[in-house]
Length: 247
Image (cartoon, rainbow, N blue to C red; front, side, top):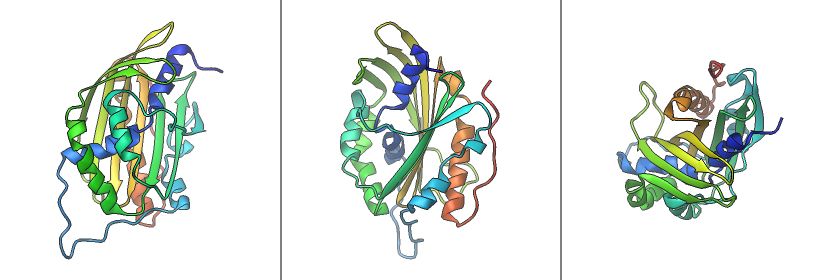
């Protein structure tokens, strides 16, 4: 079944290239403590097989979801999203993989992506370069490559996840507002949680139509993605957690 026009708008928002690192690099505004002598060695870049295991799996979502490979690289995105993309594009990855999961006819969409980089210090250093941009990024306005006009309010936080060790940096970016296409004006919301684990960046995103209430379940998906990645880093099997079906 093809997606409805509003659902395609949601997919377009999910595909704004650079959002993965926008959220991850938002941790620049948090507390990046310098490493000292005797500090643990940062987690090295995950292999392709490890990344594949770390991604959210179909069994984590249950029935009613359709899995497709992520392909969010074509459009740098409007406004400050595009500015940050220009900076993060300079980071050279060693491997990356991801999936989009679409529920029902088109929304919500849950995305899972893991990217590995050669050096954890390079990723951490990039945080500083985008700090000023992100500090001023309270809205995203502009037109994407398909002609959709975005007008979104942006908020983020970098509070550590309660009771979780092994995450070097974290942030959650939320965007809520409207997307206007040729024939439709759609209220839409997106949340993206990002976690830096050494030389690796883990992203879990969610897009839905309507206001912030549509992405209320995002923390559940984000925690599943984080727990899978941390298990892989520790050489363990990811937990068999299944999220409740969307309401």
